Image (cartoon, rainbow, N blue to C red; front, side, top):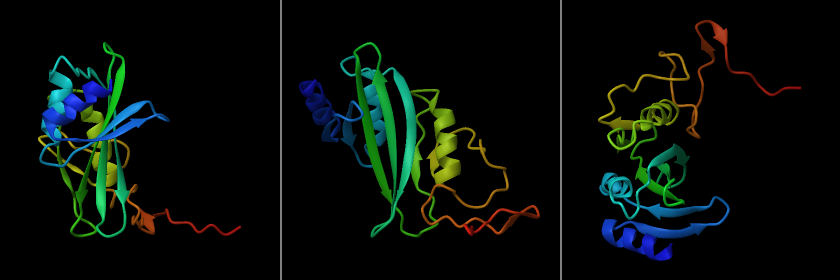
Length: 166
């Protein structure tokens, strides 16, 4: 398997972060410019063919610089291996909406995953045909999974901020 990952990193310019024993994934890191081409190789090339998109997740990394990092969890059901592709984008301003390419053209199931990440982390997926919210009301303010998220005191007259006083 190590040789297949080596071929992939050479072909795509991604960086091999090794096998993650706890999750069973090979982890690759790439930059925003190469992200779509790395994912296309994983989907289209018969050597790697990842035919199943398990999930797209994200995380808000605070610090200097502040970043949004996105994780694509892919699996080749026919070849029996898993790969996680990670890509981070620096935020110049705290409320900035980072942009990543939509991968619906590769895996149609990405539509729902991208909508969820857009709604909860404020990620814009370029080329996505419908980034309506899935979980929150359409007029909800902010991105609840960002670490600096501060909910409004009230939503349509209902109190939504509570203190943990016991």
